[in-house]
Length: 254
Length: 94
Image 1 (cartoon, one colour):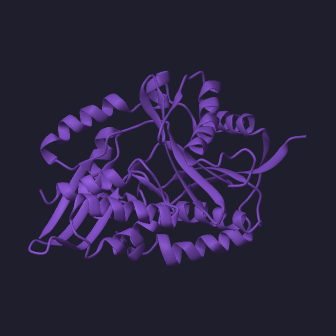
Image 2 (cartoon, rainbow over the protein chains, first blue to last red):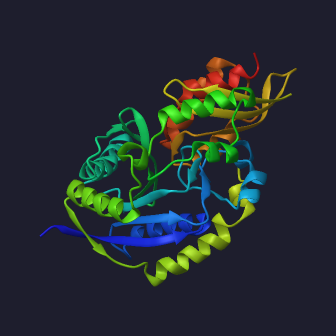
Image 3 (spheres, rainbow over the protein chains, first blue to last red):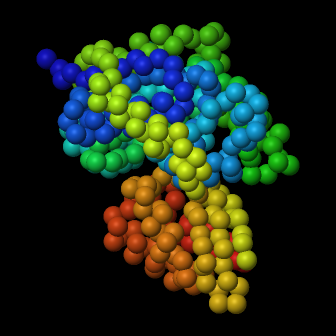
C-alpha cells in the first residue's frame, strides 16, 4: 500500500490568506502535526505575488492595483512577480528528509515539476522542465515555480496557467524601461502560454486539478487523501496574516 | 552617491541593486540586493547586505567577502552567484 499524503482543495482566498496558509502548512508539517501535503487553490480577488527578494514598489504599480481591485503580497519564496488570475496554484509541503526529495535544491525543483509534467501529459499536453523554475510547453512557459526550505521542510508553490492576459498583467507590473514596454509585452506574449491557448478551449479548474493530483501521486508513489486544514494550521494562518503577510512592514520590507 | 543598478544575469534572472556609496573613500554606505533570484536561506541576503557596509568597491575585495560569506553561512544562491553580485555592484560605480 502506498504512502498517504494529505490533499487540500482550499478554493478561493485572498493573496494574504493564501500565503499564510502555505506557511502554516510548512510550520505544521515541520512540527510533525500534519502529513506531507499537496494543496490546490485559487486567488480572489486576482493578485500579484512578488518574490521574497523583490522591492514591491519597483515591481508593482500599486495605484493600478487599487484601481483594478487587485491584491498584492510578498511571498516567503524567491523568484519573480506573478499575476495570479485564471490559474491553478499548487503548493507541496514535505520534509527535506523524505526519501523522494533530493538533497540538491535544483534536483528537487526538477522532481516536483515532474509531477506537474505528468499532470500535463494526462491533459495530452507535452511539457518539460526548464531550469531554474519553469515548465514549458512547445518552448513557451506554462508554469512558474518557487521553493523555500525552512525548519528542515520543503515548501514549493507554483502556478499552472489556465488562461493568461498579458496586457492586464503589464497594466499592473512595472517594467525596468517604459520606452520598450510594448516590445516587452510582445516578447512575453511570445514566450508565455496557457492551457486555453494550447488546447484552443477553456480548461476547467476541476479537470486540471484531477490531472495534477494524479501527476503528484504517480511521481511521488503516494495516495493523496482529501483532507482539511487542521485547527493548528487555521490558527497559525491567522497569526501569519496579522503578523506577516497582512502588514506593510512585510510587503514593503525590501 | 545613490545608484540603482539593473543587471541582467546570464541565465535570465534580473538583479536590481540599490547602492549608496561614498565617492571619496570608495566605500559602500548602504546596499539592498533585490531581484527575482533564489537564495537559501533567504534571510542570509540581509546579513550579506550588513556585512557589505563600509567595504571597498573593489572587485577582488567584494568577491572575497561574498565568497567567504557564502562558505561560512552555507548559503546557496540559485540564478546568481558571488561573481554576478560583484559585477552588478561595480557596474553602478563605473
